[in-house]
Length: 353
Image (cartoon, rainbow, N blue to C red; front, side, top):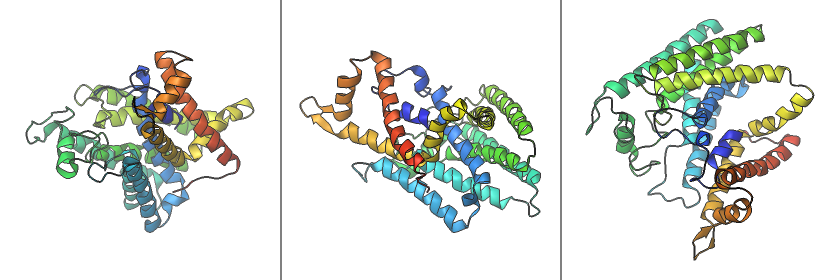
């Protein structure tokens, strides 16, 4: 969540360090790991949270609420129906959550056999990434050709234009489009498998070791697949699913080891991340609202100069130059949001959807 806030709120988009930007198209940067890490941990949480095992109505309401918040942010502050973006980050999280819960429930063995459950989820995951690769590489696209992976020419972009023209991030395509949500579900299901494995283990150290080994294997497989179906965040390619889910598994093992030994200074240094993580949806929504407000409020109509541009040029540009000033703005934004969330955390106030 901290990385997400920093990445989404630079002082100047023209002066940003390369690791804090998405890859232009094929390939990856550290920024391209943030969203799949989030979906992976959503999958883990599905197996551990009693709220995800509640009634169908409660699960549907939760998914609808997250989706609705995403639509709200997409329209805020003008809510122009003609150009209101339909896909989005929260919308994809909602769809992946609902799909992963459905898969987890539908294939759950009646005898409660967790090992069998993991095998079935793995089968569904493999089927998803295989079918998605076949669709993207072999199905001819009207006006283009099979295997066209350009922004406007790929099958997913064609489908999004057919169903949501005028309501996309870009005129011809959207990085959170409908078809690419399919492999994003696979990322979430890999998290479900990690969570199920944690529930059935009696040796957490062994579980961590399995996560690291499995994660490294997935990273290697994704890297190899890159030669035929390139790692691409916007297309959420099958190689991207394996590569990023593998990295997320390794990261989870590291975080788990840290948490088990979190005492003294380690506990104090980890507490800020707890405050951010326990109010993750609130942080995402507040970050989006604040960013949009300061970007549209004009303080100098003659320039025109937005409130954000005025704050950045007046307070941050004199302190640093270029990319450092832009990064300082983003970090300050994070610290201000953290101050609010830390205050709520001390009072045990959490926004649960």
